[in-house]
Amino acid sequence: MAKKDYYEILGVTKTADERSIKKAYKRLAMKYHPDRNQEQGAATQFKEVKEAYEILTDEKKRAAYDQYGHAAFEQGSMGGGAGGFSGSGADFTDVFGEVFGDIFGGGRRQKRASRGSDLRYDIELTLEEAVRGVTKEILIPTLDSCDICHGSGAKPGSAPATCPTCHGAGQVQMRQGFFTVQQSCPHCHGCGKIIKEPCNKCHGHGNVEKSKTLSVKIPAGVDTTDRIRLTGEGAAGQQGSPAGDLYVQVQVKAHPIFERENNNLYCEVPINFAMAALGGEIEVPTLDGRVKLKIPLETQTGKLFRIREKGVKPVRGGSQGDLLCRVVVETPVSLNEQQKQLLRELEGTFSGTAGEKNSPRSKNFLDGVKKFFDDLTR
Image (tube, rainbow, N blue to C red; front, side):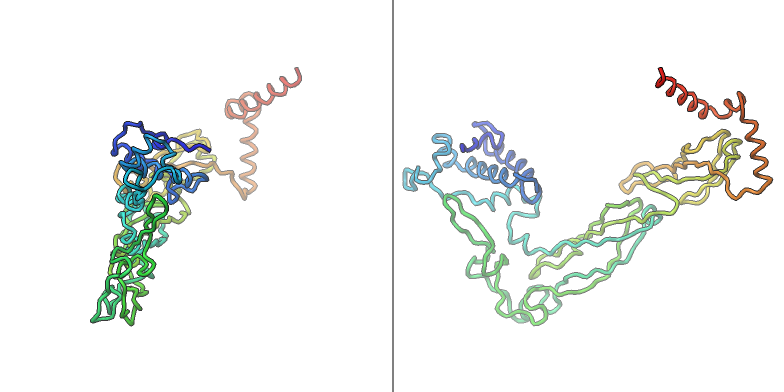
């Protein structure tokens, strides 16, 4: 099966400069990198993008490709002598670090491996706490820097020595055909240093298991799925490297009265049918106390009333939300004989033409049903 053209893979022209090629590679590698894209075929596409990038950013390889195409890299097609194509190759680890250093926290694996792990803590808040803001104390089990060796991992009076295998780089290179693959040093496991006399307390790790209490300030207006980052409060790094971060994940408990949607609050307000018909005034709850709500006469169930600026103030600024009250006309229960008799008398006044005026929705519904059946019999 013929290989795809490297320029087409990156979406650049044959006259594209190195900057344009690098820009195209960055965009496509972000899209297809296995750490970011788990779809089937993404890994294959990522390999194609990487291969195209490595060839087109190397002056000698690009010249050979422009002249001979993919045949320039087939085994035995070109020698490695003075007049042939050199297969030293680009170091992909360095390239990936150069292009993605600002995204993934640095281009050298040694630095990424030694930094402490990020931690997550799930915190549950009431709606009132989330809306108004609150300070919470949380207990975090984590790894902390050893107080004996101060994170170095070495016994007091000694110090870590430079790894003789990688000479402190933390990585070693292995040649595979035209390319050089870089991986963590098997001797020091990417640290770059060897501890000959490990600390008796942390056994050379540089950190120990501890629990710590943190005071977390929750800003007003947070909602479920929001998270708060506490820099440097995660697990301690290896041998004195920086600690990771702690992410406090917010979960807001269900409220017995209010429901939240973005910055608005909703609640249901039951009223009896006498108030719905005749109108009146009732008290409704808000997070700031009670307010009076005027119910106009002939109010139907489901009608929404908006009370301005009684919702949630956004955590990132902006106008405060509203409280929306949905009225529900409640059918009376546990009626005594007098109440039943009054209702019978009221029901009698709804018959005939006068009743149609009192219940327009019922009349429209019955007219629609009648027309439906009349159409079926035609």
